[in-house]
Image (cartoon, rainbow, N blue to C red; front, side, top):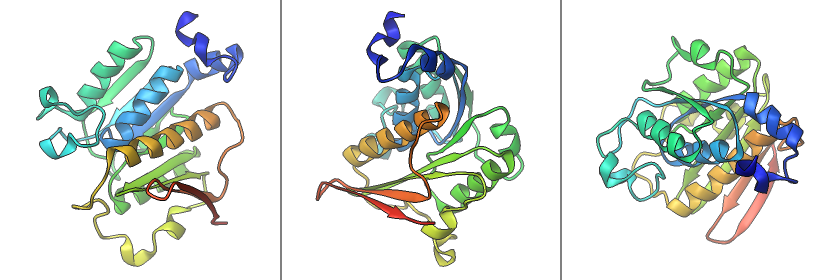
Length: 226
């Protein structure tokens, strides 16, 4: 298929067919989520379930791919769905305009192969980690602030967020009003999407470690967690 011709030989035709059958849950359709959704759709992941209860506001315009002046006030999930319909209509996008909660986490993860954490606060990230653990699927975590980014693959039972975020930080807002640059978001999301694709294809990736990006000093560091 010409659409995926430039994926080969980085992704074989057999692997391309595998991706078409996979389902990924992306929780958060803002900064990280927008770029991840775009990457996964362009590479050919066949089914995306995108979850976010928020709408776009003016402060999102500096860094969120799906944000535009025309989308201000519109649900982020709807913008994601419409964007992918224009980019790759072969991808099924299930848009769910709601927040992740204890009550809906199990249903949101049902049938998914990988969960992508594109959230913006620690309590919700921990909730998704627990839900993914219960569902028996891996979660790809990422976070961004200023010039910095972080990516971590969490297999069921590893609970790496408990190491990354000590208990005294868990009830505080993570993003708040801190600076977040579009370059940091895009770079971090690319690594997050790449790790997601590798999981779907059973290729080696991050294991028990966090990848720390510093775009100001142009360093990429792996830190072993377990």
